[in-house]
Length: 375
Ligand SMILES: C[S@@+](CC[C@H](N)C(=O)[O-])C[C@H]1O[C@@H](n2cnc3c(N)ncnc32)[C@H](O)[C@@H]1O
Image (cartoon, rainbow, N blue to C red; front, side, top):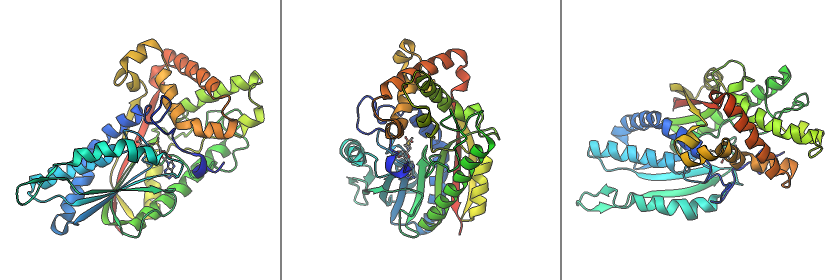
């Protein structure tokens, strides 16, 4: 499977789209606000004497939906407040929205950007006292962030949330991962090693590329789904995929899916620990670590915080839909479209059963890191 060709979140605005099923990711973006504030304030302070007339910011793995412009909106409003407080005119903004080519960029530009641009109207006070629209220029950048995306030293701030745990490819050497679709407690040691080594290669490449694209003093805020434990097969990162594997294994036992088909499917993702992230940053050498934090979000927020009526009706419903919005294109590419509804019906039942037994196991651990370009 060519990950860069196949991977994308479900497009459009329909019932199974990422746009309609990304509340967990939104919660994570909200949790990251304080670090974003630190990053923008630091950028503003160091640039204050020689502040660029135009500030270039990029969101990598922006996807399509209400989350796409969330971080950009935060960055701009923090910057406007800082400029107001110091009586400076805000810079112009150049915004780059990156994702893989299969991402539904059309929906971003036709459905989400116009409302956002409307909000920029009358945001700044000119020297003559009149209110004017904040100059903000948007660009779509299709391509993998495991390669160069921007010219040398052309960006001031990079943001990426819930994207960098996706690997550039399914690691090689997973033949022994039978019955699993990700690292699991029953995975052999060589499978865990292959996943980790792929993460190391990919993350190092990512840092190399961004190291070339950021100006010295530029900042980068990255949030990855990670883990606390030293063990990459611990339940905290593998459980949601174990439940999906259970649903698929049930279908194998009923002859609805071929066993070899299941054995050759693996999710191209890795949930690093903070130490693993930091090790690659130090190895690569272009960045200092300003801040490294862990946060947690329980899948129950999708219902309790955003969607209380659905929760009471149907346990597992929102979570199964969220995972479907993310994983459907990968599953369709490998197994075909016909089995999808059945897979997710069974997955929803697995989640409901798991939640009734141990709600606390449905937690995503987030690794958030703020980096400064030093060399
Ligand atoms: C779960 S979504 C996160 C979207 C958004 N940042 C949010 O917080 O809601 C992950 C996104 O990362 C993108 N992605 C994964 N690998 C990528 C790569 N190598 N280059 C660019 N984007 C990638 C996916 O296509 C997907 O849109």
